[in-house]
Amino acid sequence: MKQPHERAWRAPAAAGLRPAWSDLLAGLSLAGVLLSGAVAYAGIAGVAPLHALLATLAGLVVYPLFGTSRFAAVAPTSSAAAVFASALAAGGPAMAYALVGLTGALFVAAAVLRAGFLGAYISRAVLRGFAWALALTIVLRQLPQIAGVHVAATQSGALAWELLAQAPRWHGPSLVLGAAALALWFGLGHGLRRRPFVPTVLVVLALGVAASAALGLGARGVAMVGDIALQPPAWRLPALNAEHWLRAAELAPALLLILFAESWGSVRALALQAGDRVDANRELAALGMANLACGRLQGLPVGAGLSAASASFAAGARSLWAGVAAALALAGLLWLTRPALALLPQPVVAAVVVGSLARGLWPRALLRSLRLEQDAWLAAAAAAGVLLGGALPGMLLAVALSLLAAIRRFAQPLVSELGRLPGTRNYVDRATHPEAQAVDGTLIMRPEEPLFFANAEQVCAVARRRAEAVGARRVVLSLEVCDDLDGTALEALDEFAVDLHRLGAELLLARVKDRPRTAMQRLGDGIFPMFWSVDDAVRAGATADPPAAGPSPGRR
Image (tube, rainbow, N blue to C red; front, side):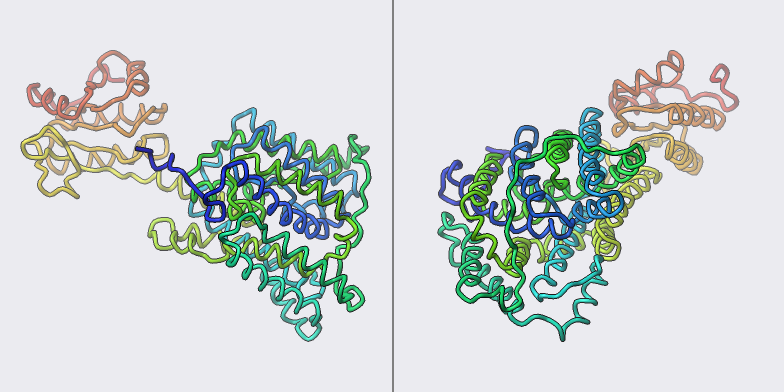
């Protein structure tokens, strides 16, 4: 019988297909989403679409060599494009492309240092809130394209307000075309659910091109993608002075944080849904190598964005080969259909991006987190941070909240008093098991969090007050949750033993693992009586005479 994390997953769109065919068809569908996304994000970055398309091809080809997610489609993202645009404005194209390369180098360095463990400090509630708010933000940024107006604001609230304020100037043909493309997307997505060999996105884009050619939509004021000029990539390092290199180095950590948070959030959220496993260190390496390649090719920064990853998930990707298939399909589209792509209406491109994110807009996962009492506020706070402050401030807030929640939890002096279950040698929490019986003269306490410098003294203080209140002659401290002990924790236990000795009681340690046992032995032989089980400690304490009250000689 398979374990839960090993269960087979089959995407609804690819049910009944062989994995190779499923990846090929997922790649075809993904290519259309990435094509439309590249055009949209190139506009955000302020560069020609070719730079976004080169980055997309590089990311799709490089990522499978190092990455671990079958759904990740490494390509330009809206948040990273915005950071790139700020670098472009500050120092020109050379500095902006240097920023991409430096960010890739930082990713590789983080992978070498195995810094992927930092991803574990971002809780699932935070990831769900971040992903939902980011999806909503991306959708809001596409609405001006559908409405046919220009909006200067970038933050979600200001963007929505400015878009509504320009309602009298909305372009009718663009609005009708975008709405029709969205309706077609959802209609085809439902109607072709049993025909996964017909990629919905390519059908919508093709019909958009046909409508543009037949109705002359460009002459009616509808914005077009325009000609995508193809030229050989410039495989060279940017020529910059020291000042621009330093400025790029200042922006690189921020871009790394954005790309890692967005990519890890997307990859891990979809892996949770599919029952997959992903490796944070390999994701760092994959993103690093992809961005190094993009920096040399003068491409935009790339990451595993939510819109593309959601499209790959919905299309039924079965392996990393789906990304390679998407790269080949995208290259074929550019080579064979470039004149037709020039007639592609921008409202249709925006509608495809919105449609690919529609699955993530329904806040089902976010609402699930809100129903969990303990971490509901993390999901809501992460979502609010992204919506109110943008991707970078929202991501920093999300990480900070996760770390604060972890520190707060570990620093709380959570200590349970144990009792023996009648007729057994098992000891359980008396607060949740009223039938558990106290042992005469012995107080049994168990810290519920590992002891370390932030909570060790508080835990010992709680146990001391309880021992004094019940007049215990022996205190058994069960350390089953402690994998190691730092210097502060060791000193706190030593002081606790001295305090108990002054009260005429003795400290015995139970369920001590090898590493903390070795650490305590460095304080001196026999300084703490240690036992492998709680029952052994209780029995040993019951047969020993309690120490006389007073100072403990030789303890210091």
